[in-house]
Image 1 (cartoon, rainbow, N blue to C red):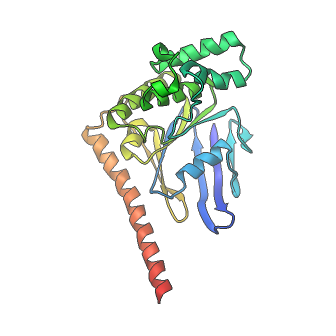
Image 2 (spheres, one colour):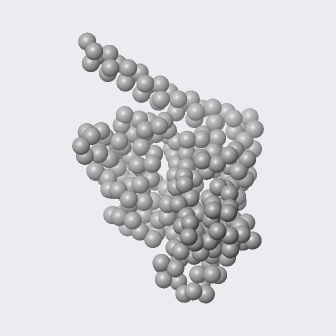
Image 3 (cartoon, rainbow, N blue to C red):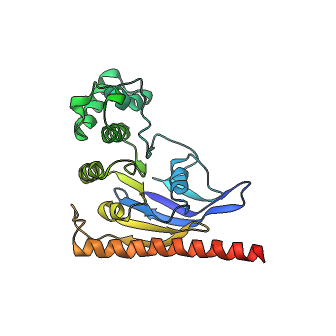
Length: 262
């Protein structure tokens, strides 16, 4: 198996709160996995552990036969905010990572141009970052992430801060890129619609502590019609599971407050 999480748990020192408990997951090379769940269930924490930005309290994470013990060039993270360098233009931002990876100057330009064309931004390559829209900034961030050609792309709600029209455009572009290159992706999202649109499988997390509730396979052919009856039915099922977890959390918190007041 390409990516394996073996009984991964995370307890944050000082809080006594176990954010994740015994998460086990196997991901095949080229799979698109989406992770959903109520707020506070540990979705972003899980992504950070796979990225090596934090370490599990127990359990292990293995990528392509090697245990993850810290950040590495084999994993690239794309966040909600584009996190671009404002003093560099679009092309220079895409070239930044591959320059740090030691590519020769001619190769840096060649690779950057390839991925800017892929995200339909080549004509904006010389634009300062502040002169392009939020959607274009996220495209630039995506081109930069893809240019590093990592084994695993980790995406933490990359489109959630954008307007609906831009989100639909970027979803279609990412889906097209994934179909072409079959990059292995772990994608955290609050949008169940987005998860059903993208995923081969959807991991549903529950909270208190964050744990695996269900893994749902998505059998629909791509590109997917978000208004089809099958799509809406699966979306409804997953949404009901996420909402059920949220209600259970609220009831548990209410019971704790009542007990404390007695």
